[in-house]
Picture (spheres, rainbow, N blue to C red):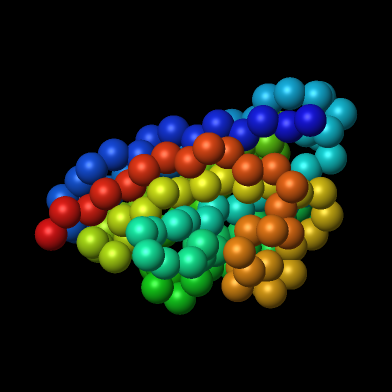
Length: 130
């Protein structure tokens, strides 16, 4: 079993920046088999939305609304993933979830609801004030 833990969420003014972190813990063998990590977000009244997925093959895909503002990075030895968010907008406000899975991540998973990922964190709240 793998546990994911997010941190870094906060309340900021529009135009500000945040850095989210996601770390893995649990069964070492299961953790070592993770090849793809992702950030999804859920805003009140909206559906779960993929923000970015990144795998070891390597591929990285962002949704259009965050390209140029958000940057994902990862530490493969730790199976940790980070999300640098700049020029934040009120519409970026949401609970951000870190997710992970074995195998590669095709683009279609970014358009999904996160159900392709067996491992989820509990989320970290990002609030952007106008």
